[in-house]
Image 1 (cartoon, rainbow, N blue to C red):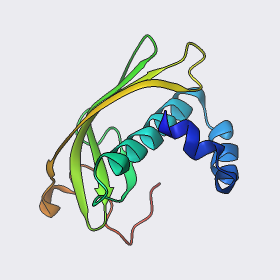
Image 2: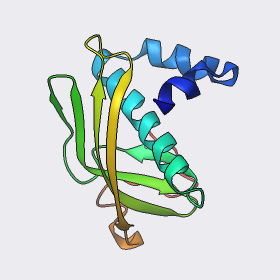
Image 3: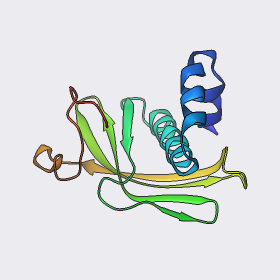
Image 4: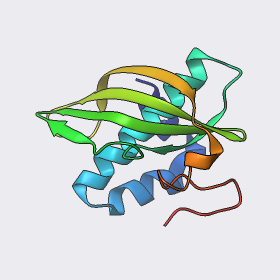
Length: 125
């Protein structure tokens, strides 16, 4: 899967270290977010995804080894887009083994605050 390739790159050493420091649930979410960004970027070269908020419009769910985000949002350039994805993990939940997504329409700016979607100059908590 693409997240494995991204994390294996020597330029990702800080990301690998940061991922190890997170609580297990946060590790899963961040790993799946990374896979989502890589998959979207590979699927459409015009998009340059740089942020995902998996819980923007609906809570995420864990079902067995599947992380499901029905109400996610992805940021690319100056816009946020609605996103749904399912990320299947290995039994130890350290690697992605299957991934599917559906990218939706852009989210109007007047809804960004409601869904905790930061503007370009804002940092995540």
